[in-house]
Image (tube, rainbow, N blue to C red):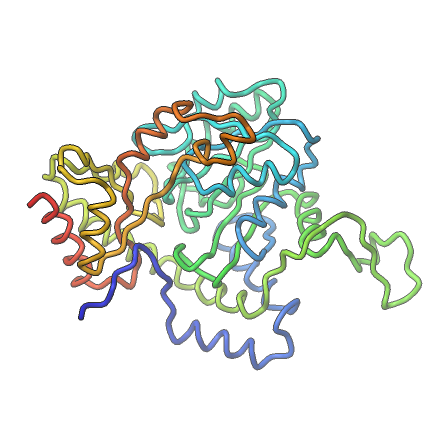
Length: 383
């Protein structure tokens, strides 16, 4: 029987395994030197001055908003087409999530919609680099500067991507902070994990404090210091640490990031060429930057095909091919409708996109045979 092809999965080699084994054999399984080594690797790749590794990207978004110290009751703007964490992080901090609709081609948040959504209560923008394609950050940064707003880039999909100007996502040229995810379906993995990059030393120190219960032992900031055992809880923080085991894997994976990026691009080229003649099928638009795509999301005219999305997913699964939908618009989730008053129909472009979206398998370990299996199965859907 053929191996099942998931929509995404990790790629672990012998070097990754050996790096984790060395961490297991060391004196530190957590709170040791490997976390800082991983953070340095991310800074070296992105060009950011500081990096804080965390237990996951949701923790990163939570702390990024918290570090800004925005008063409760204010608003933040993000995209409806994202995982719920991009909006939930605002709720965690007592802020109201407001959405701005997406562009029909890139599925990224539309700058013109951001401007329209801004009010006197708006304090922060959280653009999401959907599928790994960078948002129009120059325009978003201009809006933020004009309106005195903070910017947090949700780059959970975009480690390894570059902007059209050639800068690397995560360098924080256009933002206060950038958040990455290292879940197994992402481009690199630490099992679970995330990170925040920034060029602000003040924000960096705040993130470090919040990561570990709000506790510090730094003698330069202690208000009292009776001895070497002493520590102070100076803020209400969290236990959002990454372990040394995870960081060891992450450091090894960072060395393979460009390899992973090239593999993903090769599969996308094969897909685009194979599907370009299907009149019921729309491939992602051409990339105007140097994106490292986490997802290959297509638009399918299910009415023209004569099959529902559930039927298509079922047919492909029977052939050993996994698919997924990224994402159900956040504003249509029951909690957001019940507690915040959002309704179906509020963001029509996002809802139109969602009605036709399907993510096909994309990960570097896919073989040529795997890719051909996906292409053949998709093309045969019309039969």
